[in-house]
Amino acid sequence: MYKIVCNSEFQTKEYAKRLAQFLKVGDVLVLSGELGAGKTKFVEGILNYFDLQNEISSPTFTIVNEYKNDKINIYHFDLYRLGDIYEFENIGGEEYFSKGICIFEWGELIEDILPNDYIKISFEKSDENPEYRILNIETFGERFNNIKFDEL
Image 1 (cartoon, rainbow, N blue to C red):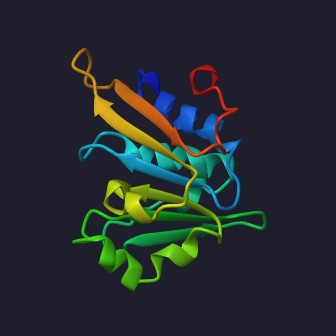
Image 2 (tube, one colour):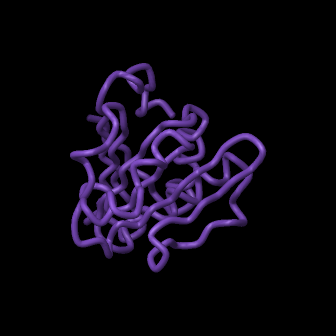
């Protein structure tokens, strides 16, 4: 596991932007943490890398927002309002896995059906400073073994 400390909202977005260079179609990110911990700001950073930064909106009431450019599709899910894994399956959620990059806020709800390879980032607010965010990064499977998350 990697532990990354971001000292500002800007730094959180910049870290996400640097991580985004390694992402490709079929990749899955699970973002967990309390409300206001920085998950959506992290997604903004990823979208920025793909020049989609002006498109961001929280998917809280739509479950998924789709962002597309001529190179990639990014699916940003907010699973906070889903009751269980079956609701995700009923909306055809698994079909998105192979269509683009999937980013799941509150994705721990569906970890049992995720592909073998994915990144899980747990966001924590720092006790030291209200602006600091601690990103605890875990990888599953082998796809991301060559990324040095602490050197991004």
